[in-house]
Image (tube, rainbow, N blue to C red):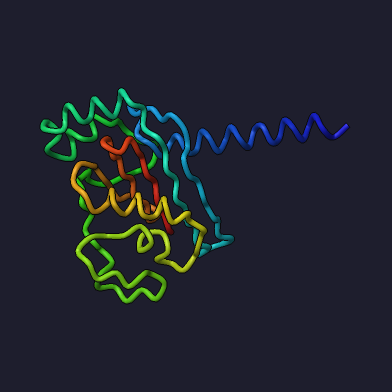
Length: 175
């Protein structure tokens, strides 16, 4: 008796999440699958949200970005190649990602003093923790620290990375 309404409600929630996730990604890039997804939502005003989502980038899209890398010299050219998002992001740049939190006394970050950001500093900066598989942490930190990918910061403490050589799209946020 309750199975049908419950199934409809759950189906709607799954559709809503999928649509919400796709709205945060560049519309010209196709995702093969979600490799990792961990999100924690805060409650009420001032509630912190934290998430790390890692997607496998379509092989053709990755190859196209690699072929055109020499043409993608500024933010507008990268945005034209990867597409727009429903979420507002700022200027696209090439990796490595600088450690923008190095001189901020954040008690929850890893106290990373290097010139390159690490993913823990990005997602744990407000002390709202999620469980991240160490293999994914290592992979994302390698992408962040190496040339060959593109990144942009956005509202709500988000960081979006497109890494064609690794065939990955990474979305990290804390806000």
